Length: 350
Ligand code: GTQ
Image (spheres, helix red, strand yellow):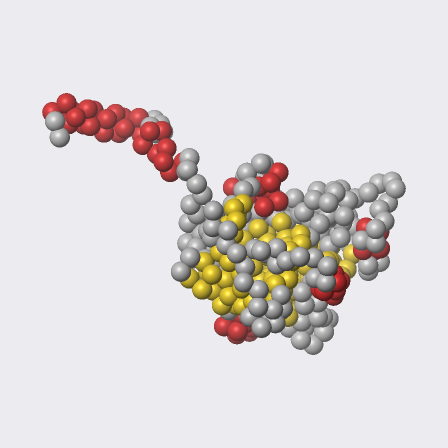
């Protein structure tokens, strides 16, 4: 180092020390970590095999009651984001177990939640006074600040995948939560199936429609969804990357069903070999039916029924099904990214 360089480097270091005490940082030293030329997520690809974690989920049922735990959930922690309760940078996921006869207390919070049912058919969720039965493959959503409680009236455990925008709300420091107390004004009770009748039959109320930020349909039943996919597959050409992929839509707006989280269902025909794809929304996938593999660079993620896996933002991947049709559920932060004009995608390895 020349003398001039040495003295300027010394000057800089002592300048940095001097300003650090005043909570000042020179941008030119950190710019490359702040404004990246392309996404580079600390989130890493990872699969949770259902066969492997199911035992642990059921064991959690032996060691803690819903009375104590409130929600008995094992969080899916992305190994690239340790200690932060995140499956991607912006989203949380966990496996919730509710045993026969149990209830999980009524409460509400500003976080939006989805539940994707993996096992069981006897649990229920009540959202703002309307109850719905949770069957395998159903997508049940609870809007921000909506009262919700769960229970299981049957004689088998029910397990579902929770997806919430907890990290996003944490980032914005906008978390509020409260339990339902005896003196809370109860939401008006509604008949089972009221929301579907009112909003899910091609009808909508002429006056006083619901708040449109979150879909008024809060159970997208798998029997309807699966039936729709089966009918559509006879007419639709397969997308080279996604097979036949649909979003869960708010019938009042056509937008995603939730304001922050986008949810999707897709059918890959038997023997499908998908083309390479990437997008800026790190995505959580769940295999609902069939089996296959997702190729991520030189990694192969082999999935079968109820396996959950995550693909980070801007990482090339391609989905392949084996010798039967496969159905995959997925969710990501695409809903909020698109509202902010941030979302991008890229196909065929370009
Ligand atoms: O059921 O409200 O997995 O508040 C994490 C936080 C579930 C819930 C979770 C929650 C819930």
